[in-house]
Length: 39
Image 1 (cartoon, rainbow, N blue to C red):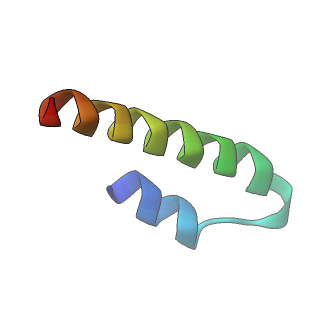
Image 2 (image 1 turned 30 degrees about the vertical axis):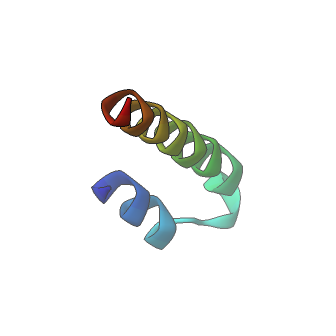
């Protein structure tokens, strides 16, 4: 969660894509873990 918030507040034009990719990857992992716990 902290990583997602951090990337939202530190997104600069030069590193926007790389940081966005990291956020998406983190979000997908979190969603995957939530689904595993839910099932």
